[in-house]
Length: 117
Length: 109
Image 1 (cartoon, each protein chain N blue to C red):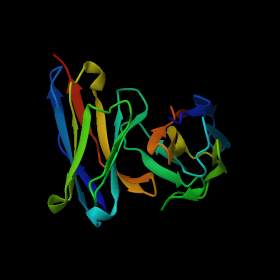
Image 2: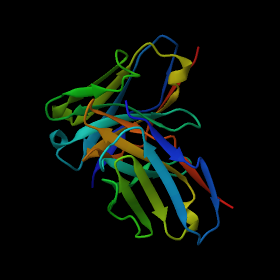
Image 3: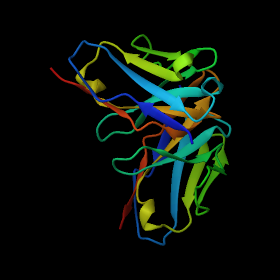
Image 4: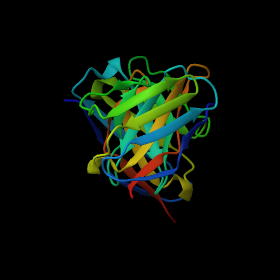
């Protein structure tokens, strides 16, 4: 069965960066794009970007362009999302999700990132 | 950038009733439209992809329709476990990007 296992919760100070990992299992990692989606407390879903796990190509939402970097390590079947220059508005649950024809069929359990001084 | 507008924001219905949720795109997305269900404290679950294809394991009471800019998710007869928030999501070819609608909460009347 397909699983996406994310790294644990993080607490960061304003201005810092955070890097969240997403380890995939149960499928051929390089055959699928992975998305990153976040959800602020009480708010809706917000797409941040994707990475083609095969060739490493990325696409970012305009909102996060310049502040987010998505990478992958094919040897570890793991994708990473790094977000810089954090503010309190970045406090959210961050999800990775496996692409299936541009919908998202498997989701990680989420990583809570709290930004607080 | 394509914007998805979901309506209504909240739908108050009783178990057994029919739910009709709308998702409108600011420009055509063809049939690149998906629907998700999210219950409190849970991860979103894919219900429908390509506007009308039920995902694996999704009950037949869930159906999706539409193309271009207007889409509908219908729950034919609400089960108590269906009370949740529903999101639509689109993929655009140019510029390549994804976005979600703001969600519709289906609550027990």
